[in-house]
Every structure is written in structure tokens, then in C-alpha cells.
Length: 220
Ligand SMILES: [Zn+2]
Image (cartoon, rainbow, N blue to C red; front, side, top):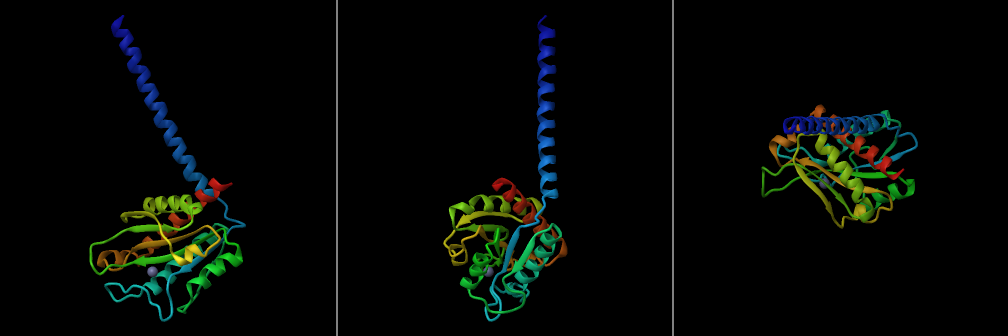
């Protein structure tokens, strides 16, 4: 009697664990499909390649300018989002000077569904510093920051430097959902090489696309 009771308990536990695993698996698959199929038609995304013109931003170990990397990255993300049906506007399409207020003004005037300022990080103190961080200013944008940061980490092999709330002008003066993304350290010799690869740019684009899809679904 005791043995058969135990067998029933074991069988039940195994069944419950398997059911739970199946539920989690199905849920993940559903989430994945949801984002893969999310239609961005009607959504307007403003991408802001940080710096430009006389302001080259940070300078990488190789001598590469942040302002060049940010434009190249934004163009890549733009192509990705457009393939999914989004309308994408870049605040600058060439190496030119642009005030921070002009960048957020474009977002406000166009009534953007999301504004993402693209940057690469740098520090002179710690050459080993590495990873991705996401900044938001308005409380309303915390959820967007969480979605994007999580997806960026899921798609790349870079460190998690987490989300931060900061008083950044390009975000403070922005009436639209807006973030500033630091997509890696160009003061880190290895990471500067990584961020220039097509593989990385694809991963970043997929991460951002999925994060935005999650956010828009969450808001609907
Ligand atoms: Zn920057």
C-alpha cells in the first residue's frame, strides 16, 4: 500500500513537472513567434545616431570615431525595421553637426512611436570595461528600457550593464517614448572589433526589433 502510494506520488510529480516544462516551452515559443510576426506597419521609429560633424564622440582604441559607428549601426537597424513594415527616420544621414534639442524636436514633431539614440561607450580608466547599458529619463519609459535591454542581451554576447534612469537632455526634452542605448565599449580593444562585425549589427538589430515589438504589444 505504502509503495503504491509512493509510486502514485512519484508518477504525479513527474507528470506535473513535465506539464510545467511543456507550458514554459510553449509559452516561450509563442512569445518568440509573436515578436517574429509582429507587424510594424503604421509605426514610426526615429533613430538618432549619436554625435556627428565636429563632435566625433568617443574615439576607439583603433582610432575609429563613435560618430561613425553610431551612423553605421543606425542604418543597419533602419533596414531591419523597414523590412518589418516600420517607417524609420534618422535624425542625421551623414556626418553632420546636430544639436541635442534638434534631435528630440524631430521625435516630437513626427510624433514618433519610439525614439532611440544610438551610442557607444568609452572610458579611459578601465580598458576592460565592456557591455551594454540602456538609459531612460521619464518614468513612462522604464518598461521600454527593460524590454530593449533584455532583448539586446538575449541576442548578443555582451555584458549586462543594466538600465539606468538619467537626466539626459535628448531624453528629457523628448515627449515620445525614448531611450539612449550604449551598445558597447570602443575603449575596449576586443569589443570595438566585435561591434564592427555584421554578425553583431544583425544581433543588435534583432534585439531592438524584438524589444520594440514586445513594448508595442504590451501597450496595445
Ligand atoms: Zn555617445
